[in-house]
Image 1 (cartoon, helix red, strand yellow):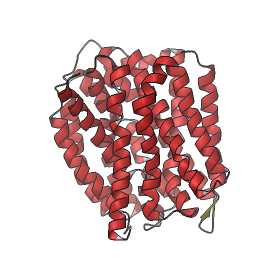
Image 2 (cartoon, helix red, strand yellow):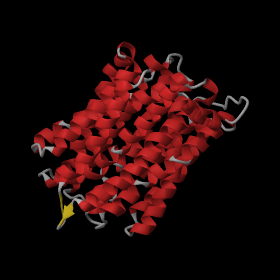
Image 3 (cartoon, rainbow, N blue to C red):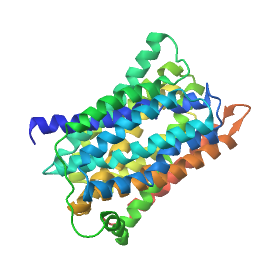
Length: 389
């Protein structure tokens, strides 16, 4: 891989996750706090990306595999997303905000699998080369968290929390430019409908169980995103420092991506790498559930970072190895459909309901809340243990 190609792909990966990481971890604090939305309403706002991920990835994959150069789809989606993010930052009522975020999510969800497929299309050995590019995803997520924390500390105030959406919009402008300068990635064509070919992969029992486990384990990750910011504040963390604390996960993710992911996939194989990832999430939920001290909960963010690398990124690499070249974009769309789509949609709904039922006089029973993802993730671990790759 040439230096130019590495820089192009790395910039693409960095900004894709910088845009996402600017708002996703901390928007819930704005919704539950200044905007006074309920847990159920917050769940629906966070469900916009999962809802979009049930539709956009497969359509975008179909377009990229069959009709349009991938970089132009990416550039168009991010450019249009800029407008909607600024509108979302100025919207405070539930229904209008839900509609705006749904529109934005339809655009952003289309880009997630395409960034992966564009990268895989230009690598000669994805298993060895992709970790060096995936590393920029957690780096970006961590850096935007620290940047947002620094900005809030500089202002000596969090404001109404809309700064996370404005930050994401500014980053999207840069992302649209970076998409345009990516290497040409024309559709590969081929007979049949790539989207249907990707769905036919579910006829393989091993792949089908992997997808089901991905739906469950990735789905309850919404408990982490909806609950962690408020949970940290409730156990004594300053709201200004929450992005930095959650950024610990991305620091761990960066190191694991660079030094462990390729090694584990080579030495342990996909099955044990994925199982280890799910187990890391289960362990993190244990610390959340047992009312551990603030410092321990902060340190437990490491397990989220490790889990994301071994389960989510490891899963995307696994899909790339089993999919045929002419349907790589659609296959990546399928795993995004399972994890960011069906899984996170159901997870956001369950998390919203559980949070509402576990809230008395404005106080959450966090042990009760996080017991649910703990049990679901444990079930996912067991399913992966019995699976034969």
